[in-house]
Length: 317
Ligand code: NAP
Image (tube, rainbow, N blue to C red):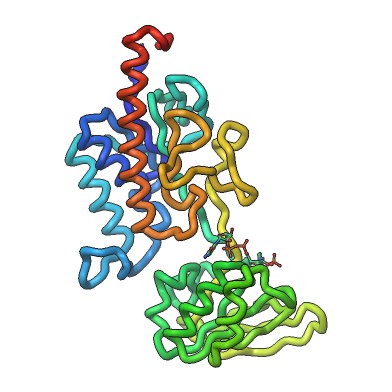
């Protein structure tokens, strides 16, 4: 007979490993499925200064390893596996991997989201050397410097305001002549003396040696190109949630995020979404960690309730 885990967590980022820690520590038979290495997106971050408890900061890879070991200490198991498909609507959920099908009474989706890239030559190579996708993570490295932000949504607007308090000068490059961002951001943006806008424009080239030194900005109406000398480029053009696996099974919002409130409960019983893949306002390591603890709490509650129902003969398996 196949083994049925109490909790299968898909994705070993901070949300996933916190759910694992709380689940295993509550005595649940807990499995984490991870594709590459512990930490998810966080593992790609050189320096994390906004996760409390590390007064000198910590690199994301080491923090991921610590989270893994913390969960394994209480018996959580990690399997390196690529999940190919899931069937989430039964009392026993099925998770199909290259190595076979796994079964769980609850599933926690912690698959994350990846920042959308500009697709300009050199962008990937300059990550951590001038190119960033997160102002609240990396903004402090640009204190007193000049930065360029690309995008016109709420993230770009909020990040421009944040960076204007840290940096000497902030350029916002947006492909249209109006911001998509909600009105609440418009006034503070226009009032900030050190924020300048490049409307109807895109970044066409990155100028660099070992580090980013500037960008070429192209006006898409006139074709005119100008150079901006800068130390940092913040790409804020949206994110791609890793929710393909659950499309058609769970409710997603227009951008593809799994709809779940602070309880992390999704549209199916026994299925929870944590961290960046969930609908939420602020996607950070600390908020993912909070989600992980909450999901484990509700999964435990669900398991107790379903066990009771099973004992009462209400469920088949
Ligand atoms: P978003 O709303 O999708 O905005 C993305 C922006 O990037 C848009 O202005 C878009 O231009 C631009 N863009 C997209 N692809 C581009 C490309 N290839 N080149 C240049 N520009 C490109 O994404 P977001 O700002 O990250 O926000 C995501 C979600 O989080 C939204 O629902 C947002 O409301 C929410 N959020 C909320 C808050 C808050 O409430 N405080 C803060 C941050 C984020 P166009 O306008 O031309 O499409």
